[in-house]
Structure formats: C-alpha cells, structure tokens
Amino acid sequence: MAKKKSSKKTARPPASYEISGTVDHGGIAVLGPNATVNVHQQTGIQAAELTAMFEAVFKKIETLPENPDVDREEIVDTVQKIQNEANKSDQANTNKLERWITNLARMAPDILEVMAASLAGPVAGFTAVFKKIVDKARESDSAGG
Image (cartoon, rainbow, N blue to C red):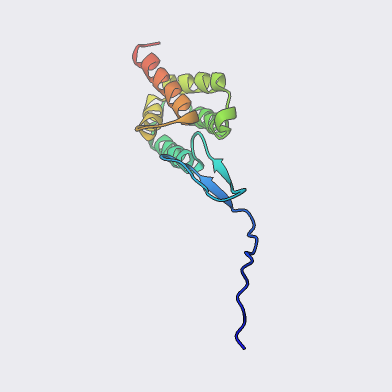
C-alpha cells in the first residue's frame, strides 16, 4: 500500500541573516514571514587602509635625511599618536588629530604628502574627516602657516 502524502505544511523557522562588512551600493532585501537581517556596517577608515597608510608613512620616515632641527624620534612619536587616535575611527578626537597633523606638516611635510596620497580617491565616514584634517594641514603648511 502506498503511503499517503501529508498535506500539512511543516513550519519553518523565520529566515535570519548576518552580514558583516561594507554595503557600498544597493540594499538588502529579505523575504518571508518574520524574516530578519542584521547588518554590521563598518564605517570610517578600515583597519587594512589604516595599516597600509601607516606602513607607507613609517617606510618614508626611514628614508628621510637627517635634519638638525627635527629628530626622527619626534616624527615617529607624532605619527604613532596620530595612528593610535585614528584607530579609534568615529570616536577619535579630531582636535588632537588636527594639532598633531599640523605639527607633522611643519616637521616633515613629505610624511604628510604620503598620508594625503594614501587618502586619495573617494572616502566616507571618519576617513573623510581624517582626509579633511590632512588637507587642511597641507594647505596651512603650503601657505607658510
């Protein structure tokens, strides 16, 4: 005797999705009763971008000629302060960053140029704030400020 198929539908659990990373364009749609989606959007400078930028900065510092007016250690110390604060992303103190980056522009404008080149292109979130501070320091330094 053949088994009779049940016409009962088995209840499915609601759809649930986890998405991490950056959603640059478009949107996210989830269909179904009680469907949910959790998006963990990263804002500001990504860790990889920061790491790459500061690696380039520290390499450039190594190639700087000796300067009797500025010790290399002072430049490294300033860049480390900038890096530590920038790692805080949206919670970074922009006043501190502005002061340190402006000082860096006076001590080692070549280093500031490496930062600016690393931030070229479209940026958003904290990266945009950081880029504005770097650009302002560049303008101030080129104007003799």
